[in-house]
Amino acid sequence: LELFLMLSGKSKTVRVLMVNVQPEDEIIFEMHRLGVTGLLSTKADGNEFVKAVAAMIEEGMYFSPILAEKIFFHGLKTNMQTKHKVLSVREIQVMLMLGNGSCIKEIAERIYLSDKTVSTYKSRVYQKMGFKNDSQLIRYLLKHRFL
Image (cartoon, rainbow, N blue to C red):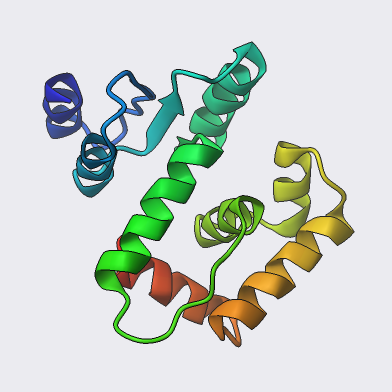
C-alpha cells in the first residue's frame, strides 16, 4: 500500500495491479478508498492474471470479481441511504465496466460472453437499481466512490 501511494503520488498515469495478500476486508476497502484501480485476489489463476494485466493496459482498472463484490456491497452498506437491490457478481462487474466507459461489445469480449448476454445484465442492473440512463449509473458510481 505504501508503494502504491508513493507511485501514484509521482504520476497520474502509473497503473498498479495489487495482489491482495491480506484477507481482511478492511484492507481491501482502504485500498479502494485510496484509489487503487487494480486488485487481484491471491486465489486468481494464471488466466485471471492475464485478463487483469490486459484490463489494466486497456481500461486502467481491474478488480477480481470476488473483491469487486466485497467492495460493492461494502459501499452499499455504508453509503446507501435508501432501498437497494442486490446485484449478482456478474451484474456488478458489468456495471463497473459500463461506468468505466466500456461498451457492450468490449465488455462481452473481455468477460467472454455474448453481446446479448451482457446487454441482459445491463438491463437487469438498470432495473434493479432504478437507472434510466447511463448518466444515472455513472452518477451513482461516482457518488458511492466506485469510480
